[in-house]
Amino acid sequence: MDLQQVEEEANMRLIVADKAGQLAWEQMMEDRFLEFDYEYELVLKWHLVGRQSLVMIDPRIAFGAPTVSGLPTWILKGRYQAGESVDDIMQDFRLDEVAIRDGLAFEGITIAA
Image (cartoon, rainbow, N blue to C red):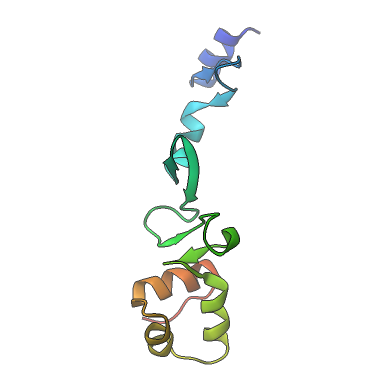
């Protein structure tokens, strides 16, 4: 089977591996590429839950830990599990409720509306 047969059979295009590119399945990866922010052709931010969430990874912030507005999500989880209310956390970190909910949801905690 040659490259053209693979493309026709899989109903997707392949980028040919050479010194100017790499082997990838364009249609399968296209949505994944949209999760990243690029600066100077380098990936610097990853919206790992998707762009609808405020959770992101930026290696320049918190050593690349998942964050919400620069605050690691594990901190939100720890404060919430320690019994603090969402309102208290919002005031302490000057975050809105959406940011708190996104961070907690990423950490596997769903809070009642």
